[in-house]
Length: 210
Image (tube, rainbow, N blue to C red):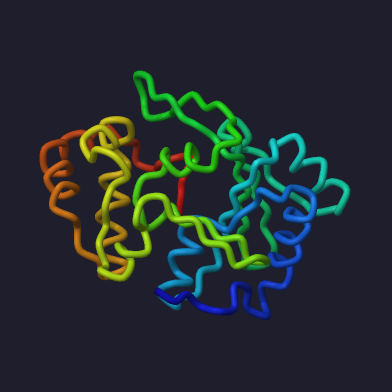
């Protein structure tokens, strides 16, 4: 399946430079999430997600050297956000998550790209692209699900929903926004646990994988 050949449009020159600087300093750095998904759908997405093996401390050090303004309010989730004009770049350290009694997990940084992919919600949001080498990593069949326009959970749907009921909202939103259909197991998991959506606050906070 082919994706849009031009990763960064002309107006994304800032984001391209930022991505290149990250790769130069931290080779295990990838475009990921909704941005890569939308490359396959030939859609423009001003929200750019980057996953890296670098720690938040190392990321912040680089941004300070480059004199790039950033927001570290999501640092407890391993996330640093850079805003530039109408572009949002979210830089997240590879991480594993362990859920307890609420939807905010304890995290542990990892060097394993597969572990980072496994914690994500849907296969279509777990594609990793290294733009310079054109290397695409897809552990869970996301390319096929984009081609067939299917929303499918990574792992068991019921377990994923019980970890974080916000995934119910996200699954439905992606179906509507992207004109995708829900995979049967995903739909059954949502129906069996729909009451959990009532536990969500009016506005969901960090983290959000776009």
